[in-house]
Length: 182
Image (tube, rainbow, N blue to C red; front, side, top):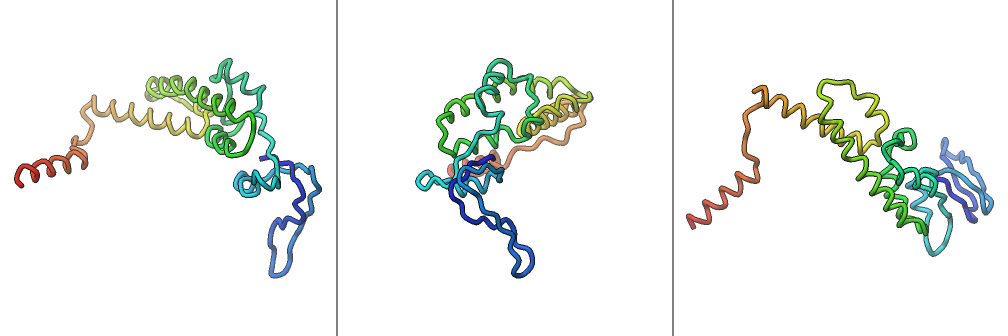
């Protein structure tokens, strides 16, 4: 996260040894990249310690690209946690938050069908080129789709294990019988 710092004074970047500190002083208006967790901790709508600058992939120019065709974007290259990081950015007071949220949602919707279709139609094929362009959430969805396809293929070939009732169904049946007996 790129932040514009307001008077931060001294920020101790790390502790090295027993009494050795390395300290940096930032002037008002300084720009620096810090982890999201730290930006969330320093961001306070009342004190205005920092202001957060949106990463380029969440800005208006990229939102236009996503609205035109989200499937052409290599999300992994732009940021492997596009959806998760974008949703965390919504915690900061930014006038563009509604547009960012809408873009994230529409991007997911438009890419979801292609991801699931690809996972279901790529049995025993090399999918590394497709998966390389996916966000980590999309990769998990793709793997879940592939697992479902592989499990189905095994079932069709008679290689599946014995089907058993879920514990919820078993417990429901036991509860039904105890209700009737009582």
